[in-house]
Amino acid sequence: MKNILYILLLSTLLFAYEHKDIERLLDDDICNNCDFSDANLSGLDLSVCEMQNSNFRGANLSNTNLFMSDLKGSDFTEANLKKAMLWKANLSFSNLTRVQAQGVNLKGTKLKNSTIVDANLSNSTAWKANFSDAIIENTDFTNSELGDAKFQNNDLRSSNISGAILWKTHFKKSKLSQEQCSYAKKEEAILNNTTCQKKKRSK
Amino acid sequence: MLKQFLIFLLLSSFTFAMEIKNDPLFQELYKDRANNKKVTLMIYSATSCPQCAYMKEKVFKEPKVAAYLKKHFLILQKNVQKDELPDGFDYFGIPTIFFVDKDGLEQGKFVGSSRAEPFLQELKNISKKMK
Image 1 (cartoon, chains in turn orange, green):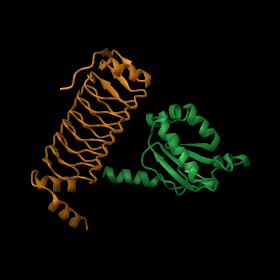
Image 2 (image 1 turned 60 degrees about the vertical axis):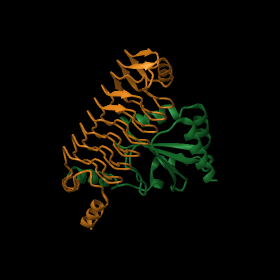
Image 3 (image 1 turned 90 degrees about the vertical axis):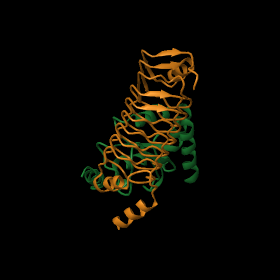
Image 4 (image 1 turned 180 degrees about the horizontal axis):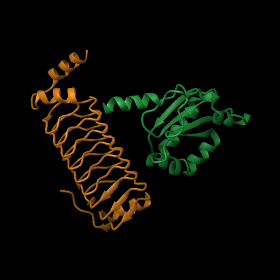
């Protein structure tokens, strides 16, 4: 039964990525340095898998279960991560440029040193996520749950955090706009060595 | 291997549970007959869960929510590290809030957290449903 499902899955996928990489991943739960670009992995259970330094450019990962998966250093440029489950996953040093990730679950996710540019993370759940040293530009965090998340050495001035839950969110050595600072304080965020500056114009 | 271990852990957490009607804490809530029309809000949470703390310390204490809870609900707290969920109740992720009638039947479930206003609406919907 499992084999039939694999064949069906493989036959529906596009050819931008390596078929052998999908097979390897589904068989062993490990596929580092693999190519999943433009692949349709929507709704699959890829939890507790190891996929470091892999290429997910343009891939469809909507509703995919990536719970506790190790995706360190991977490239998600223009990927669809809508409602994906990335709870406790490792996305450190990954590239999330122009991802569509509305409603994504990033609870306890490691995003240290990642690149999050022109991304849509609105309505996401990111309690206790770690964004330290990430490059964050022009990203939409509207109505997201960022409680107890950690922002360190981040510049959020060109991003939108309106409506986000910032209860006990830690901002350390970061840059916020004056408006964002007022909002963060009202939300009971913890600001430490964080500057409140003029809003940075988005590119 | 780790996946199988996690599934085993999850399944093992459902063993040795008892019916909620036999839970002394649940029985205590309905000792007073005046509470018979109230719904039990059973929150399954953990000490180390910020989302749970937000619901309990912030949302439940918001004046409008607090007043509504006091009037229509009874609170029962269960800790994922100490307590088994009663028979017939299951969860994926915390906090999970179960709405239980006085006969011990689950009438609704709310997973995760929210702002006070939508949560109050959720409470109103449950109250309306159970009238």
